[in-house]
Amino acid sequence: MIYFTENDIDRLIEDDVPLGDITTYLLGLSDKKGKIELFARSAMTVCGVEEVVRMYKKVGLEIVSSLPSGTMLNEGDKLLEARGDAASIHTIWRSGGVLIEFASGIATRTRQLVKNAKAANPDVVVAGTRKHPPYLKKVALKALMAGGGIPHRTGISDTILMFREHLLFTGGYKNLVSLISKVKQQQKERKIVVEAHTYEEALLVAQAGADAIQIDKMPPEIFKETATAGRNICPEICMIAAGGINARNAADYARASADVLVTSWIYFAPPADIGVKILQA
Figure (cartoon, rainbow, N blue to C red):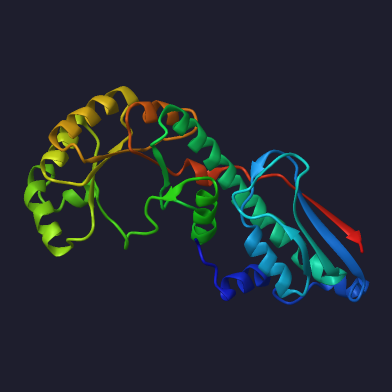
């Protein structure tokens, strides 16, 4: 569960309405009653409804119905309905709809990738990188999870992942045995992941005692050979495919025996198409 604080919800509203809505004020829409309905214009996996419900309640609207994030919708399905003051409806109309569109786009694309990958290998896991748009981490991660994925790293504070760029300063792949041993002594409860780019580097990582090998931009057929060789050295090692993973090639990497597919492709989905109806109550 990704938790949005009250301040997060307030900021979503304030970003669009920093000093009130001058149009509804001049038109005198306060105290006129209306309702707002949001519906899917195409098939999608919806996300962000819970946060928009909280936004609606903040401006005094009454929620009539809503669907939870992760629900798969068909064209025309209603996902949210609320009633209340017409001025409040117009205040929250755009910002709420855009949040659901953005989040649902990511969730829908994630669902597509997960479906393709699991059709080839039911045990494979799809993980989203931390390469999401700036300042949108919570929305992006919630959408990822609503679509059936998991966070690969929520940030650099929560996992140990050694890149080639780190190893430039520690003696390279040939010094991994002593480096990993040192890190394990300092941080015994966490797994160690090391990135590799070639078959040879991956085998050095396996021999050094890493818990997982993250292989970047390796063709699926070579990945399969590398995964087999790595597991011959350490049967429990986790083999991660990363770099350029998308819906077109996810099944190829899943068939190549990847345990995890790491991708940022999901975060750059086009927004879902959400329709809005505003009516007099």
